[in-house]
Image 1: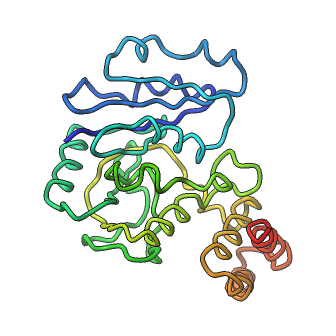
Image 2: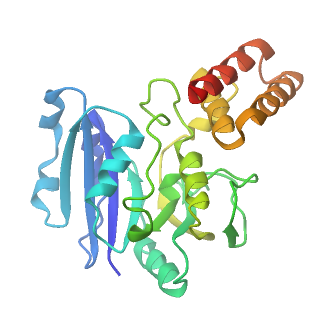
Length: 266
C-alpha cells in the first residue's frame, strides 16, 4: 500500500519542510505544494527537497490553505493520502499504523487518528475508543493533520471549500468541518482510531472563537452551510451563552456570526 504525504507550505515555511521528511521508505512519497506571495521566497527552497527522489515540489503563486491542499491532492497518485503542514513530525510507527488500519478495514474511506505536540501532549481531548463517525463530532474537533484518506474515494469528487481556512480573506477556519460534512453527505465511510500518527506545533485556530472575528465569522458561516435558516437561532443561543459565561460581549459576537451567515448565504 502506497502513501503520499501532502505537505502544504507558504513563504518562509518552506525551510521547515526538510524536518517533516523521514528516511526514504518504500511506498512513501512526499508531495510539497508550496505557495509563495513573492518570487524571492522561491530562493528559500532547501536543496535537500530537490535532491531526494521521493519528494516532489509544486509551486503556486498565491495563498490560502484550502486551495493549497486541493492543489496537493490533484498531484497525488498513491493508495492513501495524508495531509500535513510544514511543522508536522511523523513517528517511526506512523506509516505502518496507517497501512494497518486501511488493510484491516477495507470498507473505510477516511480514517481519523490522534496528534500530539512535540513534547507528547495530546493536541486535544480525544475519545478513548475507536468509533464510526457519522456526523460532525460534538465531543472533540477534527483536524486535517490527523486524517488519512483513500485517494480514489475523494480525488475529483471532494475538495476543501476555498472560502474557508487559513489565508482566506474572510472565513479564517472551518474548512475541515465543511470537508467532513461534505464527505458524509457523499456517503463516505469515516472512522476514528485512538492511535497517534503525527506531532505538531500548531495551535488550533478554532479555539480562538471568543476573541477572533475571523473565527466567529467562520462559525456563523459553517452553521448556515449545515443548518440553513436554523443557523440564526443556533448562533443567537451561542452568543447569549458566551455572554452569560463572561467569554465574550453579545453584540460584537452576534455581529460577526451574522456576517459569516450572510457571506455564505450570498
